[in-house]
Amino acid sequence: MMIPLDLASWAEAAVGGSMALALPVALLAGLVSFFSPCVVPLLPGYVSYATGLGAAEVVEGSPRRGRMLAGTSLFVLGFAAVFVLTGVVAGAAGRVLAEYRDVITRVLGVVIIVLGLIFAGVLKIGQRDLRSHRIPAVGVAAAPLIGVVFALGWTPCLSPTLGVVVNLGFNEGTAVRGGLLGFVYALGLGIPFVLAGLAFTKMASAVAFFRERQQLVMRIGGVLLIIVGLLLVTGTWNVLTALLRQWASSFETVI
Image (cartoon, rainbow, N blue to C red; front, side):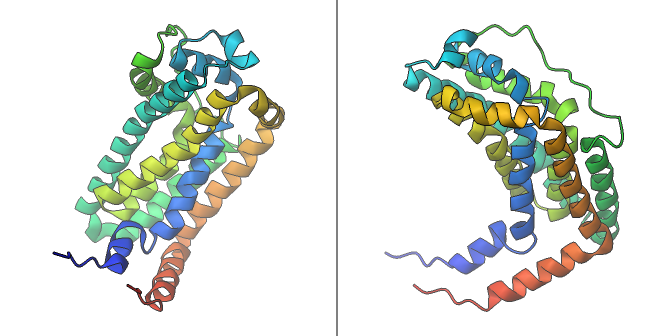
């Protein structure tokens, strides 16, 4: 028995419309977060916490690839769960307030502009770092829990970029889309962690490059967030969404 599957409808429900714009923004926000002062300077320590290996062994390149992959992947899954749940809550709240969508979109645009100014260093607020610095390197078994702890501890420092993802999830107005945005944000933040675990010595040069240019990365990220905020405030975001829907509707599903 064959079950009919409308791929076009499924794609539209999951990532159609404004999600085609929101998903790349969420991924980029995660990548910018990784190279921020919250994360990249302490990368060896984070990998050490997740794998149970010494920081020196991580930096020198541990031959225990399986352990490195398992530890960093579970660590990423831990903080991804927090960000996905945050996105689900934001999306669900947006659905409840759907009748006020136009006003809320513009208000969220203003919030994102402010967050962009914070991330760019123009506004010196909301960048406190409340991470725990006393978590032992207990190893792979506790890596998901450590990921959850770090996600909660990162929140004040990552608030500008994470706030953008939360606001976009709220604007989407569904729990599924909000959760998907949280997951994509976690991918942007988490994939470099896994790569660092597998080949830290090879990635060290890239990490050093961005570490030396953190202020530039922060400013570029802030400018991009401000652009997203302006698109929401001016209504251009909805115009682009409508154009994307029109473009997508011109394709036919071939089975």
